[in-house]
Length: 436
Image 1 (cartoon, rainbow, N blue to C red):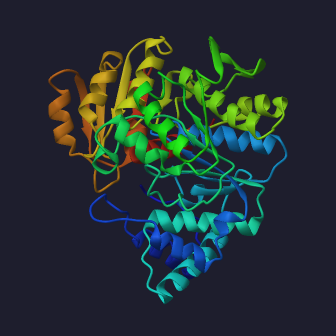
Image 2 (cartoon, rainbow, N blue to C red; image 1 turned 180 degrees about the vertical axis):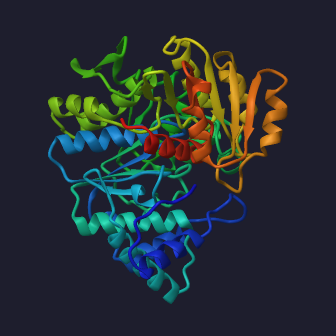
């Protein structure tokens, strides 16, 4: 993913260059949290200086984090949040009260991390560096709460050095990153349940919709072992759906759940966040206002122009594409739909195409900016046997957006989907060209 910064000075560029030189873990070989724990100790364990809410899940993490941080802000708290991945700039991954960390703050913290870890020869990954930077930033900004999003899994995630969160959350369990987390939902549930802490409540996504009974049973055993409590939508709380909103019933108290984010799954995400906030004693009006105010870009995000309509979605796994298909099945878009797609080799992209194919009349295939991007011709070979392919686009994203805004696509619905890396670039270029 291309990074966009407003750099002023060599030091900042050097710090960011060093950050991106830190390699991600690819799931091969041994891995544990000891380097991250040692690095945190160099900064006197900043992750334990503020109240935190720890959020894991296959899908829905970012949305639930957004609901939680907005509700807490509405209630008058100072709130930090980590976001993963970012859309345009790495700064987006660390924010306080809705504002991304500044370039100068990020440069200073990354320089400190580099100097201290190199002095005792600790090798951190890119994500570990970002998480540590977030912890340091939140501690220095003296936030009341930090909403921490797990990067991948839970048990061995860099965020899992938090000792005593106020609450832990698992939004959903689905098949993704199987080469690291396991081949079944039960195995993946066990990995995600690694964020559970002794005596801490765990809030779990809707049973049957977001978390299967089998995965729930795995998680229940972990909670019991840790002497915690489990709160699950659909069991301890009832969610009644009615059109684009719902009512969450907790101990006879009703909460209006009317998100501006589209899709029935967002009502469930908002209800899960509301449950956490109710437990933490946030008043009802702040919960309801926070849900209504929450915005999360590129999640069933629409852009309606006078002569065409865009639907932008970061769905990038099978479960996410099923959610997208459910939204399209509700006839939210009528007329021809052109799908602009690109995928990573690590994803089950043929299944993803199959899920949405009945709603997409033709495709443009584009390349995500990632070393793991699937070959465009391989995707084309699969698509041409089943759908109309307008073109394989192996040029700049800016030129692709120019084409999508031309007369060729007048009157069309245009879906941007397939890889966060691709969707982020498409969205950025689109919004630079269109006054919203």
